[in-house]
Length: 133
Image (tube, rainbow, N blue to C red):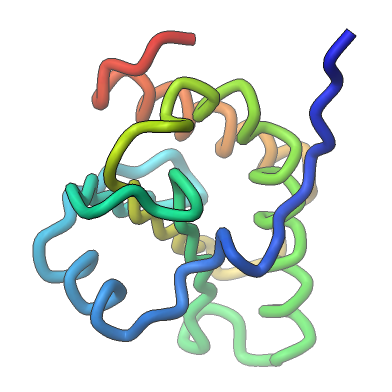
């Protein structure tokens, strides 16, 4: 029985300014409220990770840094728990998928709401990219 650990290592986080700028300039987006998902498949040399993720909560929506960090932790946790099912078919392919999850609500949402939105967003992303799963 091969059980994969649900982790979210630093190598899967989108941090290159060049990639972030390209994601927001050329990427496509959709909304799974309270999340806006921006994605861009990038064909490059075989990458260390199949998916690079950025999580953002605007200061305009949640003024206090503690609240923004709290929501970001919830979004990352929901992604961590659901990513195996969504992106297992991307492993081993050349290129990477750049992803950004942006929070839209003006108040903190319960984990159940964020998790349901993440489930909907990943299912929609699978359908858009025509990934098996």
